[in-house]
Each structure stands twice: as C-alpha cells, then as structure tokens.
Length: 64
Image (tube, rainbow, N blue to C red; front, top):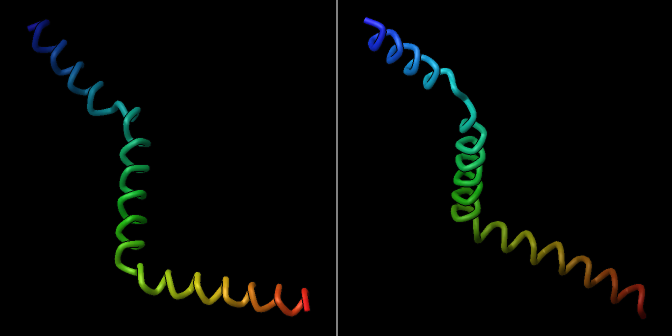
C-alpha cells in the first residue's frame, strides 16, 4: 500500500513540476519567429532595402 502511495505522490509531484515550462515556451516562440521570417522573407528583404536606400539618400544629401 505504501509503495502505491509513494508512486502516486511521485506522479503528482512530477505533474506539478513546472521547471521546464520556460524552456519549452522560449523554443516555441523561436519556432514561430523563424517560421514568420521564412514566410515573409521577400517582404522583409524589400523593406530593409527600402529603409537603407532612404538612409543612403539622406546621407548623400548631407554630404553634398
């Protein structure tokens, strides 16, 4: 009987342990972010090129 009680308490303690939850959450967030980058790669590339093009134009205007 005591063996069964220990097993139940051990299982309950295991189910209530949340020490690894933070790691799983971080991994899931990274997976979602990577998926978004892959899906919107072309749009992000064009956006960055447009932004840096505007910066370059501004710098050229200041230099001249």
